[in-house]
Image (cartoon, rainbow, N blue to C red):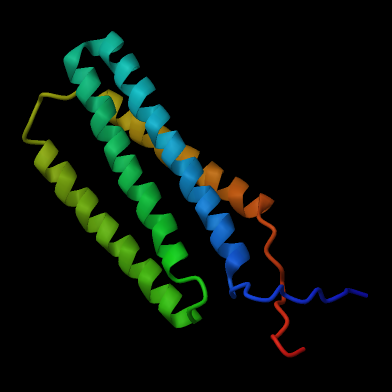
Length: 150
């Protein structure tokens, strides 16, 4: 049988989820910083200054996407399922609008390398998904939290 471990006094509800999401946010920010440095450096070596700009823009878009996803989940810890669904879906819709707007604006310019931007953005999306998965897999989140008086 399973044994219920009482919550320590002063521990807030959802602390395990918050710790897991903070780890995902931290790892995502480290990934984006590495992408900004390596992507812009490799982009510069491949196609000069346009590659540098492509790497930086791709890392910035990846940072926006990684950060808003984890932030929306972190913001809704402890709230009901309806609130969580509304915030996460609203954030996703806002990200799509921002992405379309940014890409429409960027198509008018040619100061950046589109291939470098795409590769950095792709690496950021795949890397963030893998890091989020790792944070969830390694997170120690209990299935049931006993009530304070139980």
